[in-house]
Image (cartoon, rainbow, N blue to C red; front, top):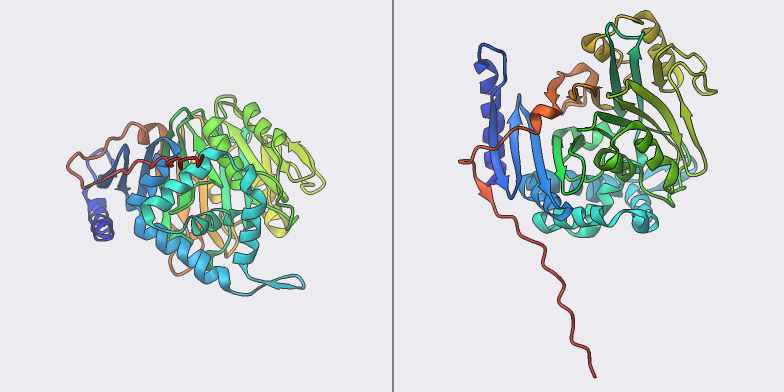
Length: 404
């Protein structure tokens, strides 16, 4: 029933595009509610509001996106996960890698995220081991990112761009969702993600901190906190750039990852390498052996020809970047053919623009960007007449009687 309701809402949202009011505000449609969580369609884009304990948020996602969660994770874990892939001289199945990652990293993942995955499993009826396998997949992601600010932009505004290049043929884009989360005791945040995922690789919080990651090498170094949960921890707990940096610096890390982290309150941004054995910061305009062509007031992280093209564009538009031209920094070939999603953050205002790859595997950079603002999304309320799905509380374990 939810799937039919969801599809009807999708069709309705397309019709509503022609029904903008005079001020240009897009109409929205509440699809369904669950506890304090709810799902709506805005400009044809699914926006999932989650609120409460981590178990409750997991359950809300599982209930409101049940068919998408099952289709997405089952395809990743049970179909693509069993295909034989080549990693250098090795021929292995992704599921085998992921199951090994889960075993090695399980103890490093904060208990609250295990609770969230348990809620997701309870609401969907999926085995928890499959939920976990799907959620550790981001350990294999690769990408590009940048931040431009101060003298690099037209009015000094900081723009943070994030290019996710990964697995466009795994159908993730068919399950794209914008999650607006209000965790109990944590900082509200927005997560650019896919149905069924608890961690994050792209997001921004209400304290004006934005973050995106880029994968590197080091396959096999998985004894630490998974990358996607480190990013999630930044979104949920970091009130400023220094706190965000400390999360990566102070926690055990896994294989090689690079990050761009920005703070709209102070107009600061850094590039960062946070690998199992290395931690270093790259400040705007700073040279690095992997980034030999720095640009003033810019952090540019990519590789090979994509890095050179990003530098060329950043130099060419230096001092003139606004939101529209900053989006163009992510156009192909900076974005690869495997470009799954792009996001541009303006963390000071909490505005963001998001594009996803098309179902026929056209790169996200060539698709429509959807505009949102986190501060506005947090103020939205669901339609009380929308269908309501029950939120089933977690059942406490019953202690077995002790034999005497």
